[in-house]
Length: 64
Image (cartoon, rainbow, N blue to C red):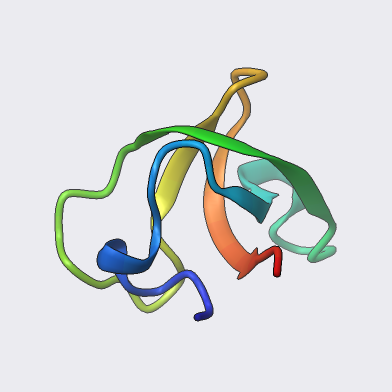
């Protein structure tokens, strides 16, 4: 599970996302999914989510 499939991501899941301003550096931000913002079933750069702390970014890794 790498964050590219919408079916793999649910509210309450612990994930690592890359914020828009961190895309160049690849710095990951950790948090819990609050909302799924991407409507399509897959996305090549990761599904866009909003975390419980309000941060918005694309899922790069699902915490195991």
